[in-house]
Length: 177
Image (tube, rainbow, N blue to C red; front, side, top):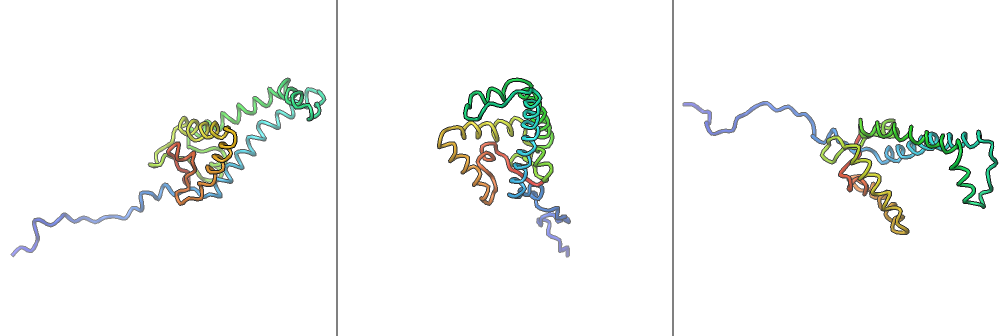
């Protein structure tokens, strides 16, 4: 008598390949904070140092800070403004290239994290720039409500999902690279 059941499900060896979410391990909160700080330092160096050097090269005397309009006009005219603008364009170009290529700013690249869509697919430069950055910056400019929004955006990182408000708007997450 044959003991095999013709109605039994097929059997096959199954290899454990790990969790599908293993690739999307959330980036650490400290790494995200460190990346923001590093990006700010690098942007400041590339923008404000050339601005100051250009202003120093002009030989013009800096007006007193009490005359706010004259102070800012002195900064925004002459070689200082051109050097600062060149630094801004360099920083912006490098950042846009890295974000387009890997979903990483230089700070995120150094700290080993990147931005991806919530399904793990690559996030486009437009999604990251417009939805993660521009919308939140514009909303943060609203008096009083903008300050509250910025605070809430930052504090949402302490949730289990580690998604800030800008992540939810863009449908992105920050993961280990």
